[in-house]
Length: 345
Image (tube, rainbow, N blue to C red):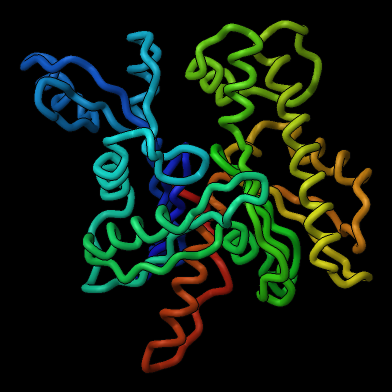
């Protein structure tokens, strides 16, 4: 048994195979601090709210953190920022360890193979991802897994482009970063990240409208659509403006990197857009419209977004883990080309 793990700024997801189905487990990668009392802790435990106590504080972790933040007018805190472990959050490592343990569970056997997502270094920032990657590797190893990092953009290729011989452009729009990978027959030709994602959209919208960031996030996740029919001045109107700006910025950087890498001309490239930030209805069409105006040395055969864009990175990590596991079995049997089953949470 092998597993895939998507360690995202906003959400952490695991993927494992159960017969013919791929099973996903998801938790929000955030927490909120509340005052400790015996009654509060009893109620949290009774309600099965994920939490831990430290001194005179209780930390509500995962999916319940956003609900508590909105109720108590507090802001959630994040173990990760801009796609990597936050250097400004002293509780980052213990919190992400707790959330990851809840999501991935214990290994089914000693040294179970687990591929976990890791972002590429951003081209528009001096941030290094090395500490983040090695810290997660150590943490997962301590949990009993045999961990291996996989580039987040390459995970998208593995998950969504098996029918195109793992050839194409995979773009993962996460909360902290946007990861991009161009692959040719499963060999990465170009991979990088951009230090903007869903958090940037939320923060800019919050600043423009005077709305708390967590409230903006809730609005964005509650049936928000990129239809540009919303009234100017509201949260949804501002979200649409900054979403469009994000897409222009990402495409501009992709075009620049393609030019610098001197990518071969004449390729016919399918494009897949995934990630939680790409979830709103209308995102796929808007990205395709903006991509038409970009000057690329290759032709774009189409832009596709999977039905569940949140699951693509974890799925791709699972494909990689199962492929390696298949290669190392005595029978030498190859696993399926990719998870096709309906996702479960």
